[in-house]
Image (cartoon, rainbow, N blue to C red; front, top):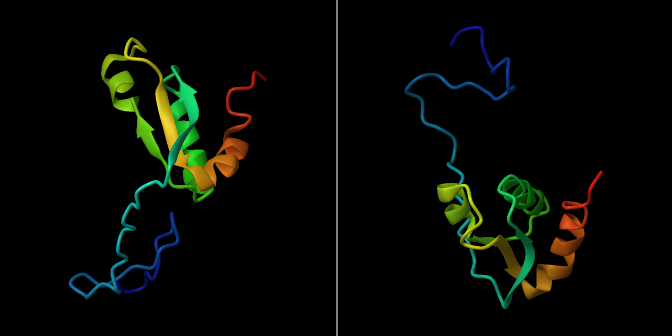
Length: 104
């Protein structure tokens, strides 16, 4: 667009319609966890996405188990949702998640 070089909301550069995009960023291919260990377990639905975001922000790969059953039913009748990380990342993950369940 003439006169506009970036989005005023998010400050991302704009491109002309029909122009070729810059090199596409390939999504990261998830790597399997090595000796997975459970580092977080919760029956409270709202806490799991927050725990996941903390691990993502710390760059710690994880796998969630049981979260879809909780989301589907809204109940914990199937047991808690759990987050697993590789054994090498377990100490770092526990440190990142240490204050998650503390009462204020």
